[in-house]
Length: 629
Image (cartoon, rainbow, N blue to C red; front, side, top):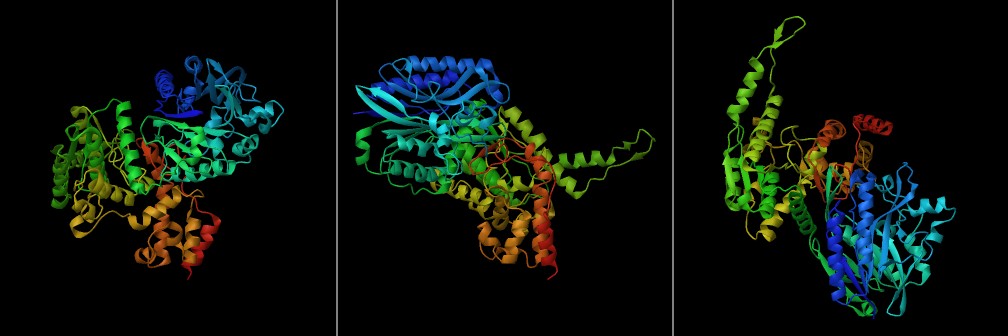
């Protein structure tokens, strides 16, 4: 009876030595457990998101060398693993050496060649170039190879015949995107389906995205059911990045039987190995569908991502500026779970505009967490800065004339934010021996509701892919489930969100941020996360049809509540669109790395150009029509 092991390993990007040691350890464990086959993830040797490290020939040679170590370790066991494959005699379209994203199979120290492939490995067919993916920048696809050889992908894509203990098995080998072919002109799975296979294997390096696992179970379960054979999906865990955006890889490796049922799922964010007898899978009971709320998955992704990020940069202590608001409170509760309260310093930095209410809530939060706590008032420093700017002469060296700067109330607000971050938090972090956080949420990041070199600063923006409503949900989840007690004070959850930078943002008078989160969260989301991104033209079409809330997914009645007239609605829309496509882009470019959880995170996932706001001809027509009524 054929026994197949799924090895869910942590892949450390850019460290083939570490990854190969993990693979060799898992091979031995699989052999000990009586497995005939052991499957590892896509790009298990080098990692996946490596930037332009792929252009280093020395690194490529190292990956080849470690690949040979894995092949040599395949005595009496079939090892399936992902690695980069190099044809040193050929070039990619950029003139650099030819590289393939490849699926290797080794047995008894030798590679097993797919039936019709010109190489002793399977080459990835479909190259994703959306979201965080940039595969064609580095890798040559099977489709390109087929054109080069004067043939078709269907003739090259072929099963691998395995000879194990006197039996022959035919496996259909796919690499990640090859199983997600709905929007491609070519479907690798469907082609292999004609080959009378015994099972499929999809090795993946698939970042976590909220809701992706449910969709994968539907897609891959259907594929297994229609083909009538089991399918093994093996994903990695770990943390990888492409500079501005940081991604968790949750694993969740899954075995589907020939009925399409999920019969085995490996745990999120844990290394694990499981062995399944192929012949018994059809009789295995289907695992029950998870009833966990989305916020539970988000919490695990954030906790794991923060922990691994800190480990990667060797940071053990954290400083957070807390205001008595929800974002900094949730950040504090998150980091306290990761580093421990003894390694967390919370700093409250009140000015004359901070109420006794928020100062008290900050103290209550720190008490609940049992962490380190400081109160450093900033008003004296802010006043000193303003005085210096207004009283120091500004000399025109061409004419010798002198003038003085005038600090407006708006500039004074920015000075407060910069004093808190650039002076207090940066200094405190250096003295404490750690880093300080950026606590921005996604709504603020969308429209640049932050201060450059102020509250936009920090080493990581862990909450910047969460809308405000998700931040509140996370506060409730941590209180109810993670801590099992009230850590984030209810007063913080209840109070109006406010930067408290002026008397116009007095929380005791119910005054807060200009962003109306119950509506703007969803408006801004339509700008970013819709697959066909919304523009002001789309929003005005919805407004004209009376379907804004339906299309945005927000609560009915909010448009009339917040915007009694068409002019009010249009002024609000243009205010935020101008910021979203204007100054906010410059701020996002300078923002800290963002930890991704959504279907579209800022950074490399959402590529932007600083071109300024644009309104289509149809938008201008709709605007004129609505304002004329």
